[in-house]
Amino acid sequence: MIKYLLKRLFWMVPLLVGISLVSFLIMHLAPGDITTTEAGFNPKASEESRQKLREIYNLDKPITVQYGLWLKRMATLDFGTSFASHQRPVFWEKTDQQGNVSKGLIQEALPITLLINVLSLTVIIAVALPLGIVSALTQNRPPDRAITLFVFIGFAIPGFWLALVLMYWTGVVNSWLPISGLHSLQYDQMHWLGKIADTLKHLALPVFISSLSGLAGIALFVRNGMLDVLHQDYITTARAKGLPENSVVYRHALRNALLPLITIFGLSIPGLIGGSVIAESIFAIPGMGKLFYDAVLMRDFPVIMGILTIGSALTLLGNLLADLAYAWADPRVRRGVLK
Image (cartoon, rainbow, N blue to C red; front, side):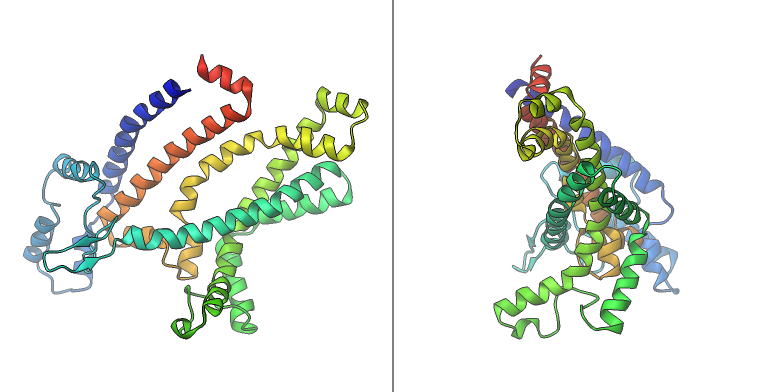
């Protein structure tokens, strides 16, 4: 297993470099750059001023030189400085010559996105597993049909449309929940319990919107997995031995039906970090999704490449962790891996 792990880690390096190269090339094929965006706010900007901006940002150099400079910085986990006017570091905080500390954009946005997506994943697991199990055990009966209808509705409803409807209904019409941001204006004057309650109120809608489609998918996946396992010969044998139904369902059937979910949860790691562009943009949540969306609009190449590189690395890592967890859970897979 150690040899297999080292081999996979070794191959992750060239894969990551290849992904970053393709991303860098595609990004630079798009029309315009940061100088086009900045000049758009100043119609009187001359071509000389735009050229000077390109020189400052090294955009006047050949694309191979630009990628080489970026790759050299990336090797030390330095994703550079944002092109935006605040000139903040992309990844982690830096201290300038005057001793001023600038917090990194990803460093600031990442905890917010992690909080939202961990809460969403908790909701998905807590709700989807029971729904999938009940649906499988009541196949073709009213509970199964009701759950299946809910699952397809969850798949069909556009997230942005539902977010706007819920914002209007819960925030504008009834004033039950706040509709934007993470904190109220009086947040700093609140007691710590009040701060927690205020944050949870602000996160209720974003977490619900982020959970809905994932919840529907996991519930359907659990249902189909349980139906497949419940028709296996060893389940029939367990029932023939007189084992209690709860033991047959939860100890034998569910354990094997959930094995494929390991892969799904392993590949969900990048989503935990990448955030939801729709939810964070609509609810004005300063997370990774909104940061990426704003960077694309501004042609902020260092921020875009920083987020894409981190997402690619986490995708490869999640895939590796899923393979290892699957091999640990299923001896048949482990024997195949070690060959």
